[in-house]
Image 1 (tube, protein in one colour):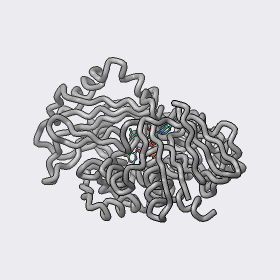
Image 2 (cartoon, protein in one colour):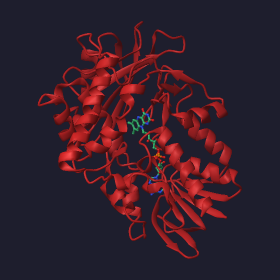
Image 3 (cartoon, helix red, strand yellow):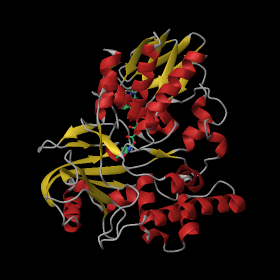
Length: 406
Ligand SMILES: Cc1cc2nc3c(=O)[nH]c(=O)nc-3n(C[C@H](O)[C@H](O)[C@H](O)COP(=O)(O)OP(=O)(O)OC[C@H]3O[C@@H](n4cnc5c(N)ncnc54)[C@H](O)[C@@H]3O)c2cc1C
């Protein structure tokens, strides 16, 4: 059988690999000139590997960890705590306080379901959970930054349910692929062979009894018996056009919200321990992770801002110099150089955002909606499963399985 795949991020690549392993003919179409999408690594001038996009590999991210084991790619510990960040006054949330914050969030969400139903924003859930000063609470600042979207426009019940259980099984020790997370994408690409057509954005999809047809921006037409669509959410919304979809699938896609985020990766020096630290009175943070030798931070500081409002406050239009100065002002533990890379995902033409969250109109009936195919098409990508590197890989494997079972 012939399969066509749109998008060569982790989702599309993993779908293509599973299909190739099952003996099918596969062709992948990618708008960019590289594989990996939002999994994109680079080396700073001092040799430190940094991530433009997806970075933290959780302890429970078994699919990416299994692939790394299979590919012989070591995952090194970051040596910092993602959920428990240092404040500039030298305090840090205890594990018990973190558990309490998560418990309050999830209980507030379920209370609101009882009184209001499911159409409740993340801001409303946060206010219900933590009271009128919710926005000053470090946990809440982390929550708003990590979800990358306007807290008035995403569903607080869905977000709270994502974190349910973390209060009991919270474990740190997240990691990164030592060679760069995109080594996973590059290795899948190497194994599937020369089947990715770069610089080929797909702009139209049609489905007939005979199969599926992709049309590229250049007007070329590609046919497959079946297809996987693994392009980012804003691109998908345009592509689905008049395609016939199962009940609730279109509302799940239309209602989902793409977030915005930016990163500044800076060359730093200083014999300090690795540390993730919240900016003073601001919802962005920075981290220096453990060197290969351990205990001492490596020579790279990553600064992260999630959400358009926060990004606007940092005046990214100046190329990052204001943000760099703000960082230097509070990361006095490190010697922060002028040598940096700014990545603004909001303006990236291939993704048009960072990653996605369920919109205000989310309803539980949308959960698991992508566990079915839309005729001969299956959808993959973080927006169809979980907004992570691991989630993208799993969604690709799911899409391949769905299409080979029908
Ligand atoms: C700033 C940032 C920080 C993050 N942090 C983490 C983290 O710490 N941990 C974690 O696990 N995850 C993190 N993520 C999320 C993670 O990176 C993504 O969930 C994952 O990489 C998405 O993979 P994907 O295959 O769904 O999409 P993508 O990687 O975006 O792949 C989709 C591909 O489709 C291509 N494309 C677009 N339009 C078309 C078209 N019309 N035709 C053909 N191809 C097209 C794109 O160029 C792209 O290559 C982060 C993401 C960002 C942006």
